[in-house]
Image (cartoon, rainbow, N blue to C red; front, side):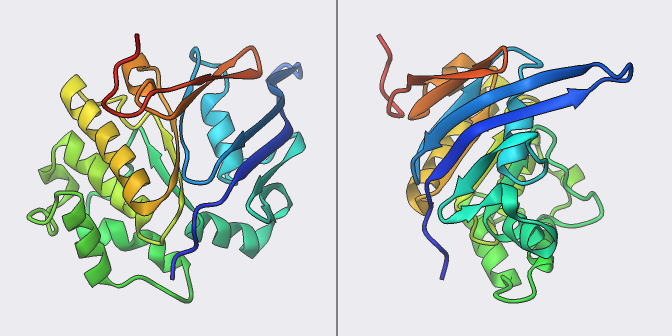
Length: 238
């Protein structure tokens, strides 16, 4: 049985990098924030402000210079080796601007890829097909990425993020390469999934209209994080 979504807590998270000339620069500076279980949050800010870096830290793809990140009772920043790999495979779903589908695999085969990382509780092909059907791809199960539209490829990527029962979805500009109509449809799909699966969704976006549809927006600027309320999907901000 899938675990429920859990509270995400960032405490004094700092990430520094060292440039080619040896100069150290700070991208994220002592960020503290709490995201409630099953909350939808848009992360906005100028290019280079550290939005993708923040998602990578939350998802365990990178390690902060200092500070801690906790999901439920687990401190993500304390996980290493197999524990960290299992956390990424089972607790977190990633959706990127580039869908990163393998061109030689069908839609359903691409969705099943993350399940190979789990030695137990592995999802089967029937579940992957059902998941794709729920995302409107019931007739495209055996199509290859080259035969799918951009929106269809992103839906396959979303199904792949969900296949292991992840309740935390980290989405890095998933609409960035899509036209306006398709991008809006992908956001609708993300919000529908959040509601139906009781999942927490964090989405990096430069699109203000998309951000306003989320429950809350966090703005990243000059290493700091500030929050603004969003609106419920379908409402109009005055």
